[in-house]
Length: 355
Image 1 (tube, rainbow, N blue to C red):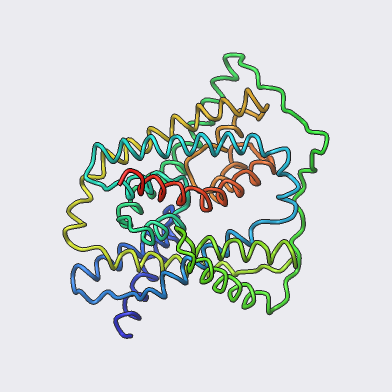
Image 2: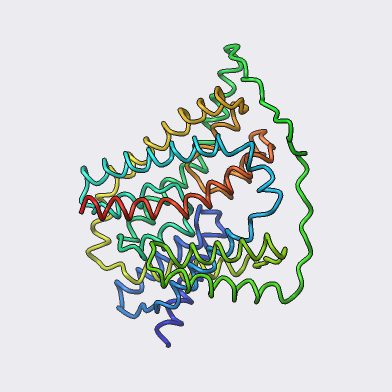
């Protein structure tokens, strides 16, 4: 118990520092570094499986309660662009994953999970559950997210300005007959017992689906159960500090598996990181072009929708470069849900077939 508390305290402390410094995925990255350092230097790092289960259940619950009925009202007119976006993401994930597998020492599961366009809070812990090398997955996702947050928005703004100067007109924005107003819906007040109820439903749903043996079952079960709770009864609330605690649990669990030999192998991740960034960079601009030309998305919005960063980050960054379309937020949320539900299953099937 003392080793567990020491690991959690160190992980949470460094994670909090990096989070306050606005490092992308700072809470999880800090927790991984702290737990790994404790494990390598003293061997005292310890984190039980229950911590991983709790982290997955809470991560799924946060995604589940983020879905609203208003999001579903947008779905009919966004289903085709969302399908194109997910199809392109899947293609890039598989192509870059196989390239990384061939040019590096990473096993196929680790290579493919490193290329999943999901968030830092979700994919590394799912990777650990599926038998991948979670620390390496976390490092490669950190690189993708850091560049996605810091570099890609600036590139998108520069490309848009250059296109405007060259007289390249925007595609006319397609307005569906059932277009929705841009004003966001007011949040529904939640009773005090909504938080413990949401946690209970998330843990129960995660446990039940985990028993089926499907990849990422805990996270998938908690996501679906809390989403149903939110949509059916309007109940779904988790305070932000709970998510930070889950990230600390997740990072600490991953960090405890890092040894000195793993630390030495990190230098071999430079080339895989370059491949992943280039692959998702090309996808951002090519898929963005398709969304602009085929579905009439505004130029900057189309590229932001395909940017390789977290859904929450893109929703927040978009307004900074002059994009305030509610459809972008809905697309990012639905993309996040679909990636969590579909990509691990596809990757598990491919790995089993390839052997």
